[in-house]
Image (cartoon, rainbow, N blue to C red):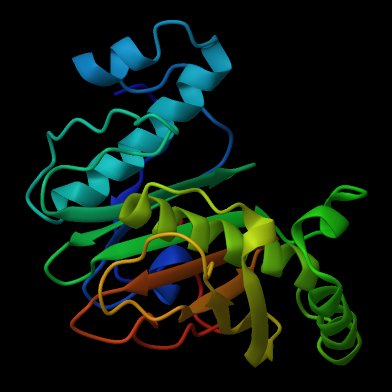
Length: 258
């Protein structure tokens, strides 16, 4: 193991674990992407053969998180090659999601018998680049964002809505083979708690009316979010046997281990 590599590990406490269902296993790592990441198994190495050094390092760091999370399900040596749209191809019987942004990488996995699909996303807690909000949000969403920003400024709401849509897309694609894009989803959010450490709350996502959907899947699902340490993390999950909202509430006062 290289001394500069991140050390993700499954944990019951932490940023992404705070917003996940109880059946999910999480792993996360912080800090710069190491120049020398862990070695990749053959299928992943083949997928990265034309990637530049930075892309390969980012891929390897995120896959290390994924394998660490899978170890919690007894699958530490599983390969996770990318699929046609770049999505992780999980071992049979596993649902999962990977996310990374500047200074942070995370993965969440669960047995598909417990959680049929899961989506997570992480974003910097800051305004979106100029013009992007108008592309990925509706006029009604922007009006709600404006009201929330005035009444609860502890989090960047436009970035939170974007993150919730990204998480929902990651849940939707493995189930349907369709990528709706952020503009095809409708999101509303609420804040449940805020303190000096950060803020936490819930959101709902209206999934696309057009296109396939698994039997029994509601078009509206609930998720959780947490803002802390300059990051926003969101998670949404669904199982035919239970509600779509991740179990439990994120606790902003609880420090995230690193």
